[in-house]
Amino acid sequence: MQTVERIETVIVGGGQAGLAVGYDLQRRGRPFVILDGNARVGDSWRRRWPSLRLYSPAASDGLPGTPFPAPRHSFPSGAEMADYLEAYAEQWSLPVRTGTTVEWLERADGGYRVGAGESCFDADNVVVATGSFQHDHPLVPEFAPALDPAIVQLHSADYRGPEQLQDGPVLVVGAAHSGADIAIEVARAGFPTVLAGRDTGQLPFHIEGRLARLGFPVLRFLWTRVLTVRTPPGRKVKGKIRSHGGPLLRVRRGDLAAAGVERVPERVAGVEDGRPLLAGGRALDVANVIWCTGFANAYEWIRLPLPLDDDGFPEQTRGAVRDLPGLYFVGMPFLDSFASMLILGAGRDGERVAAHIAARASRSRAGGRAAAPELAA
Image 1 (cartoon, rainbow, N blue to C red):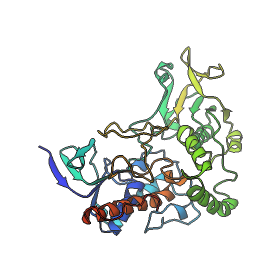
Image 2: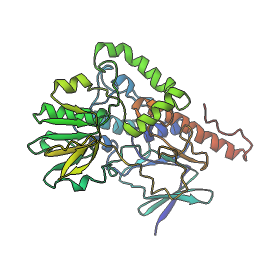
Image 3: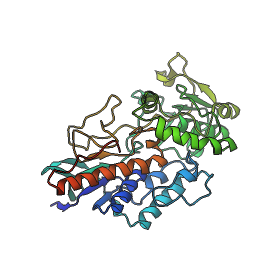
Image 4: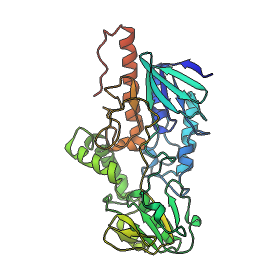
């Protein structure tokens, strides 16, 4: 028998986006619980490759209420971010229930019911904070199984370092910032390396250089105020980011060339005689393929008529799904702005969602007479 627990808000996912919403709900005195399938808070960061470092300086990597504990111009590792999130949840006594995997979400009694193993939760609000990098939903092309079985294939979700590879050339598929980071690491380890995929652009300066210390505040303004879903430049960038990934950040074109990476601005289109085949017709003799091709949107557990936009993401306004009152999303690419997929955007988006939830509660107490929650605040 499943036990049913009643609580105002259920947050699904205990990463930075979910914790940011929880922090602001707690500050407003609203009851909630955060459900996370990992054994520890921050495990989604611990599962990424060990050499990964954040693309924003520590000064922009803190969640509301707690600065990141590192020199402001340093770039934390993924493991350090994991430990920070765990400490953040403990510091603010956020009610995170780890080891609790949410399996389904459906409507119930005018609100929502969330199923997690033997437990059920009835809630007025559900915040989906599972993010876009769900390691159990890696995307690889349909033709990947047709590659020669002797070729080692890894997705970036499973990549840990060059020691996983066998001797011989490496093809890295996907030329956004993750693909570039992995390609340069593999090349520097002595593997002949090809990086394939369309050019996604690059920052005009090195993010760890002196110029970046002056330029990053400008980028922060652009990412949070200019490149939003309400501006023509923002809407144009939104489609590119969601379909092809972000621009090169730490590793730039010149760095790849200097490391000996062969840059091929073509997509991998199929297989020829067991070898990966580029769109231009060239078959590559490689011993390893690393797929940096992103992750699938996984919403099949949501047993609701979820409206999707043209990019396949939930249709929402600053996190709120208009057609399903009380359902929210955070941590998505371009939820509201370019910054939404970065640590610095988690607090901004989380505060708006928490404010909307609090406004719904106030309206409910007033018998529906209070003003409608403001989505544009």
